[in-house]
Image 1: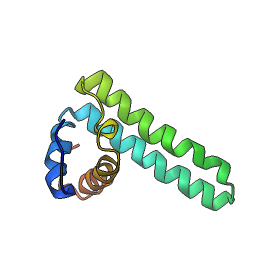
Image 2: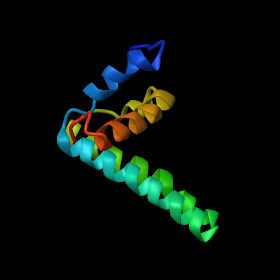
Image 3: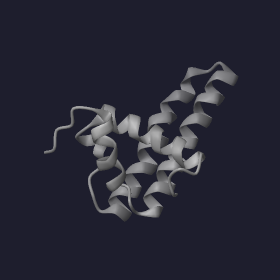
Image 4: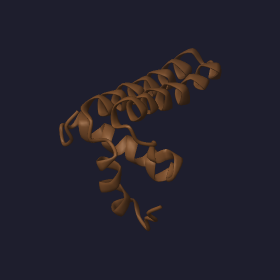
Length: 100
């Protein structure tokens, strides 16, 4: 197992684990749903919505990994770096700095 000493070192590995366009699209969709769930929870002042956030985020991402990438999600080995990688990749896709 590769050990990373910084997120900067980890992120190229993370992107390499997300080469398939369908996997990236599923990550993007899941992350968008996470944001939507958080907005709904705040707007309705009902925290019960929040249980959907990890289900949407991880559910979509894991389908992308198992069905398209044929690899294990990086979150299994590097949970914090992977979570950060999800949001960096999301922001880069929004800004068109990464392909979807």
